[in-house]
Length: 179
Image 1 (tube, one colour):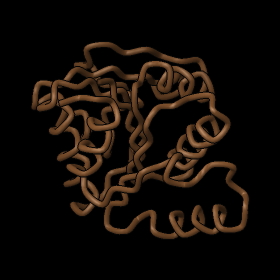
Image 2 (image 1 turned 90 degrees about the horizontal axis):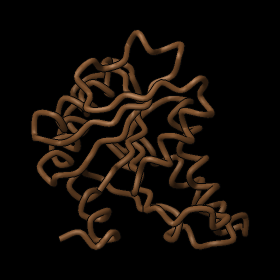
Image 3 (image 1 turned 90 degrees about the vertical axis):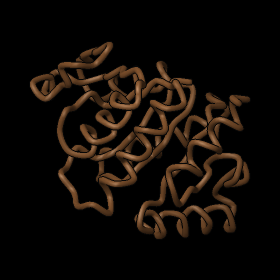
């Protein structure tokens, strides 16, 4: 399975790096491919290190203005002309999506895939990995959107919230029929 991971390129403390490293290792051990923003810095580096060390394949999609930070050892690296093309290529090259901790860019990527899914333009499973309760507020906001009629589909049809990496991967493998 090709798993797109949206996450921060920032250097963060262990409560965020541990789950990123663990999820990368699970991708590799499962024989999956990590599809990610291609950067060799911050959490993006951590998840790629974990996947590669465990035997996973790396497919990076960088962008022109960040190409200098692209991971040299990736199996495949595509450089997009802008962020919109990058998002499109990331999603086109993935069978599933996991949203990990991040800032505005990660939130933008998350809402785009959920919007596509809401309108039936994709059926890819989406997991929000709620590391250290990072997305508790967003989860509550989504529930409010659902309760007040802003979502035409049940929230559970759009996104699965996982508290730990192992739960995220288990959900993806089950939804894709991987044993």
